[in-house]
Image (cartoon, rainbow, N blue to C red):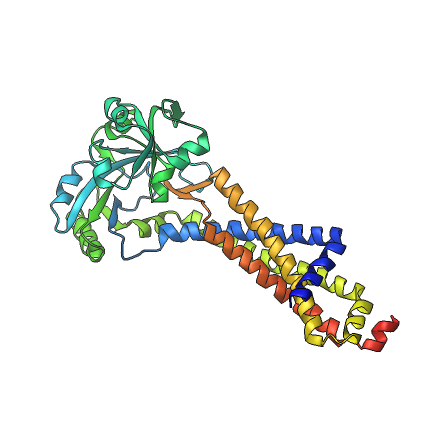
Length: 379
């Protein structure tokens, strides 16, 4: 078997140009496949509910864009009085674009004393909390947000008519926190001219996941007859409902991924078939020397697997590095989606390319062993 693998590698090296073009073609397909899988996994991470989810989002009923959702800040005190509510944080959101976009700038205004209490998982990796507490125009930027725009602690940043001082860079295990700018609530209320006491939403942390439905119903029932009625949903369900445009766009990419898979299979199959037809005499000689049909089939399948593996490494590696370097962020209705690839996605693409290469070589392998020896020697 080792000898056959060595021979398969030498056969590929003998035809350098054809092998190189095939590997580049497979790499292009797997680059697209890896990018699509990254999008799908990123979307799943913010929309698929788990038993660990304990956060509700209270929004203005029949509103979607943050600019149209306005709720009185004093609702927070009444929400805190509901059973099984652990913490409530009023949030003011200002975005540069409510539609689906690749370049979304999101400001989140929060009461300064509640940010670390509500989200203790946030870690300041650059700068410090002293500047954040001292300056009213201070901002804590998510790590990906700052990286994408080349900002660091001490810089000034202007967007959506709001100028802030970068007091620090934060890192969070939740992707949405890494792609926004946190500022003081009262500062954002004044800067956006929405007026003090008005917020976009409330994030409510409940005691346990099983309390989500009960607490959501209690909140909506409490404000049903008020001038600003609410619609309360689990955080991930809220994202899935409000970011409809974004989800439709990412859903369409599945077809691109399928197209990439078909293209890889066709490309490898065509390349291997050409190699088999150009080596009719060589395969006949091997069979004359006593190599069985299974050995010839293994040789052809090995060549296809090597082409798929090489192309998968090239395509998946480039896609993983590119997406890590660029740090793409997609947004819709004020919610952000970080397109960050995991190493598992790249490994999946490489394994998939290897399997596709072998599958694509099955037909050429049968062609190679079905040719009569005498006829092949005369060709």
